[in-house]
Length: 525
Image (cartoon, rainbow, N blue to C red):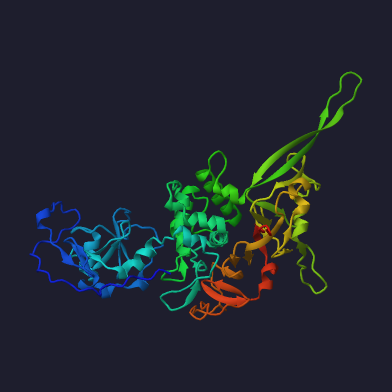
């Protein structure tokens, strides 16, 4: 937490009253005469040029309403929809353009008697229509909310000590553990983003991305802004909105992903990782590939019939091909859902261990490709630092979409993968993994919603973040009591539409998991 600087305390000097002169606005075109520059005392003996005043000298400072401010949305004027020279009204939170006499800010100030505005680019605060700049350290928290920044030392220590902060409504929250607004149907994206944000190297790279000269990816820039807002320990609210990031996703994906339509989280994570890898990669390598990319060996066999010459008949041969294929995640096939009911007239819900699904990559099991007539065998050649497993729950065709409710029994710690890699590779790599996040799906294929279970790195405890598309009637409308995080308990906490509830940690492995995120264990030495 960064403490605000105290203003005042120094002995103020006497000043002359400045001569009456018309306030200068942007776009007036009048040049200042340096000989007519007049100084006013701010505090602690500091001076500013004409056009600046201290907060104590501005009669409208008490109208600033932080509870109305929300800087998560696209920085465009609410009237003209332009994104140039946009200001935010610190009284009502509206985005308006310009500051001159014919601007929307000027008209809004006269019409609504709102006089304090901040430029969203320069972060300078002005009083309108008076036209002077307000210089006051008590406004630093607002500037930090617009563009939160963390130093490299702060980023490196995020996992060491759990930091808690208080929002405007008085509730306490852990840094980095906040809800994410569901923009009508973006729960699939929110679940994936919350999972990625607890992956330490990826999170740290996003937090520090704009600090270097490598900021060349617009998608990475928007993602970095979102991560910094999630980890802002001086935030006004207990939730953030991914609006600007999703706008960039919609544009970059040519509307493959939409805000008003629910998408596939697997396709979304594939788009995000591949796009970032392409934007940031050099010679086929990037920070994304160093964190998530592994390698499998694919052996393809196909029967061929060759015509014989003369008296020789046709000969049958097998064409074999080996290929190394990089991957960011592995897809696992579920057994077919049951067709019959039990004696109690209830459908059986089968359970299958995760290791049974992983046998797809043991190098022995054959997979028949119906369309091509090929037989394929997969073998993991390289394990990544963070392993993403996709459990294929949904079956789609031209007529309907079906969900497989099979429960996958997956371990939260010590997932051993040495049986799925060659012995020569297993001796050189870490093959044990611990779960850090699990995206699950609740409900019917089209009417359900996605939620995510994440492991909070500083505390080592689990939290369940649910961003449901529609609120259940059983959920309480008041979130104030549920958002309290005053006690550190060995329970899983559930965030349902930004409400926090406690649940047992054993329930994490009993959910209908769709995407699992595993972290390789650190060497003992």
